[in-house]
Length: 293
Image (cartoon, rainbow, N blue to C red):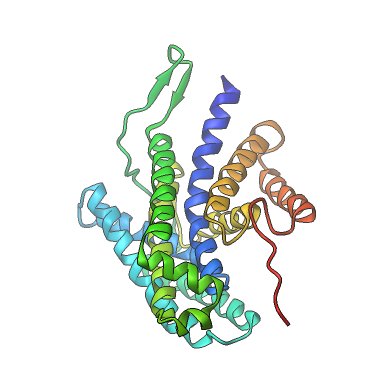
């Protein structure tokens, strides 16, 4: 039963990575930029929930909804102030700006909330599921995390394929200039992408902190980096790739921690990524894009 327990825990952790990876893969697929401040949006969402529940006494669901709204507005604001002026800039300039935004959010959290570790109250109250006469227990947090990941993936895929805004995203991802000539509002489409990714980051952060209930200004750093790894692993720019990459990464991490070494689990994750990129540089579901010169 230990194997099944580790597998379920890996799928649960991988589902969180997958939800976070959606933010990376959508922004890169549409705006062709890497938003390394995405992990810090996770941290802000967790602090909003923490303050709403511990200081204001709000129930869990309204607190999570408030965090989604706050992170959505934060994502739009960051895009307008930091990234929109760099729409035609070099990738290196955008990358440096993203790192700067990340440090700004971390230090802002340090000033507002302090550096001490806070105990995060789990927001999931679903009872655990016991199987095989109690030999296998699936926690309520795991159930909600996996279910949320599946619902979000299906909903986002339908949104992109069936709605006018989703079609605009596909058009912008193919060619910004051509999309603009066809009447697509490129700036609004990119802002919408940041809004969706940031809102999902809040949900993923709450689920992550429910499973690992500690909160600091650096809470989102490691999940953010691993989710970016998951996005690259699955093929950055691909929504199904974010799901597959996140699940595989979570399973690899948990199995590496259980069967090899808890101290080397992170190294194992990144080593597997290096091997995959050596064999298939575009990731598992990525596609090779040939640029015209």
